Image (cartoon, rainbow, N blue to C red; front, side, top):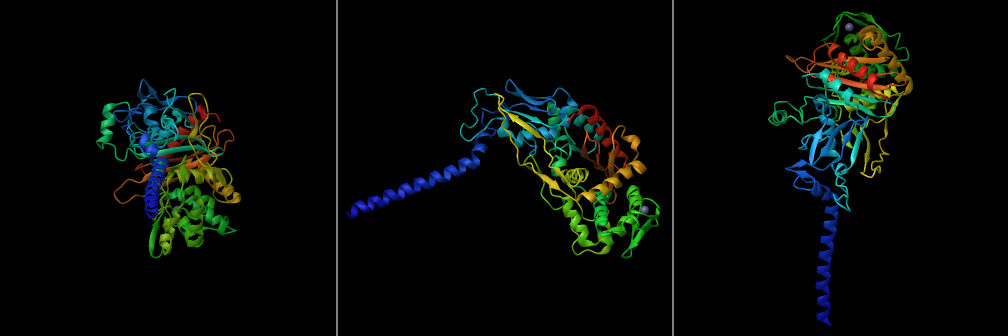
Length: 459
Ligand SMILES: [Zn+2]
C-alpha cells in the first residue's frame, strides 16, 4: 500500500512536469511561433534570406509596388516610385523595421497559428495601401538629395496618400543597395515620418496661438511691439523683421518672434503646457499598429526666456511628423480626426478580406471654436505671406518654420498645413533637413505635392 502511494506520487510529479512543459511550450508557441515560421532560414518563404513568397503590395489605384514572381521579389517599374515608396513597403532584408514587409510579413505570407505558413495557392496575401505612387514620386522629386520627409493624409477619412522619407535608395539597383549597406546614406533605414523627431520651429506658433485664443477673450485687440526682437529676462530674442506694433493676425502672418515670445510668457507655463499636450506632445502615436517616435515638450521649472523660446518652437521642443500631421488634421476637421492609416485591405488569394481594422480610432485636439480661429490665422498667412498663387485651385491654410538646429548648421525648412477643399481635404507636413531659412524650400515641395494630389487622387 505504501509502495503504491510512492509510485502514485512519482507518476504525479512526472505528469506535473510534463503538463508544465506543455503549458510553457504552448505559451512560447502562441507568442513566438510567427518568429519561428517567418525566420529568414525558412526556405518556404525565403531564398538566401530574402522574401520569396509574399503577396502583392499595391497603391490605392492598384499600381503594384512589390510582388513575388517565380520566387523573386520585384518592385514597381519606375525607379522614382521604388525609391519614393521604399520606407512604406520596406526592403528585402528587413532593415527598415517600420516597412510593411517587416510589420505585415505574417499577413503577406499568410501565416496563422493553425496552418503556419501553409497555403494551397502558395502565393501569400495581397495588401492594398492608401498611398498614391505618383504623389509619393512627386514628393521625392521635391526632396531631391536632401534628407527629410513629406506626409499627406485625408483628415476626414484617415487615408495616408503620401509618406516619403529621404535619403532613400533603389532596392532593384544592386550597387545602390550596397551603398546603403555601407552607410553611404545616413539614416537610410529610418522612416523619418514615423521614427524621427524634429525641432518644430515657428510652426509651433500654431499651438501658442491656440493657447492665446483660449487665454485672452480680447486676443485680437491685444498688441505687442516688435523692435526687430524683444528683450526678455535680460536676453534678446531676435525677429526676422522689424514689425512694430502687431496684432495676433499680423504677427502670425509675419511669424513675428517678438510677438509670440511675449504672448507665450503672458499665456504662462501651465496653459502652454496644456495646449502642447492637447496637440499631441508627450503622447504615443501609432499608424497601422506601427509605433511612432514621441514628440517632446517640457517647460517645467523654466524661466520666462525659456518659455518664450518654447512658444516659438525652439527650446527643447521636438515634434514627430505623424503626431504633427494628426494635429493639423484635427484642426482642419474642427477638433478631431480619424487617425492616419495606410493599410487599406489585406485579401486572400480567394478574395476573402482578412484585415478588418475597427480600432483605428480618432484623435481630438482643440475645441472647434479655437480650431476655426487657428484655421483663419493659417489661411491669412497664405493670403498675405506665402501667396495663394502657389496653390492654384486649392484653399490652403499653412504655417512655415525655420528650425534652428545649432550654430554653424543650416536650419531645417518646415512647411505644414491643410487644404479646406471639400473634395480634397488634405493635411500635410513637409520637412527638409538643413533646407535653409524661410518658407521657400519646404513650401515649394508642399505646393507641387498638393497639385499632384489634385491631379491624381479621387476620394
Ligand atoms: Zn517681429
